[in-house]
Image (cartoon, rainbow, N blue to C red; front, side, top):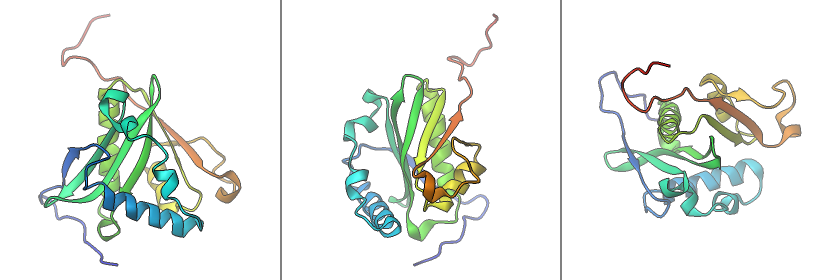
Length: 178
């Protein structure tokens, strides 16, 4: 596995692009995600990853899929889908194995939260697996509230649910009087 150092201050950040699931740049990330999940959990995870209709991750259906591109190559990405009228559900958060430990997952989360808030969602919901301590740590470090007993053995819980409430986004840049 190749290790990539964090970008130095002032270096160009990866570009953010919104894409459909069918974009060919999405495939390598989902393939690697499926392989890692399959390795960690001992069963084929590709079916779970593809278990949601692609249109759920489009703006027309209340969702979004984004990639971080570095020199045109995807290095990280993530998506959300409509969970309910006020809640977006995060899915498919991923950083390519050669680009980890650079803060890219935090950036993906921040972009997804901003986009969800701009679309009127007030809450983010997600689950992560019990064998993904890095993800659990990321969500705790970025202000997500665990909806489970953090003292319990994660293997006894199953999927670990988290939530985060988003601040209200004003519809205009002007203050309003109430």
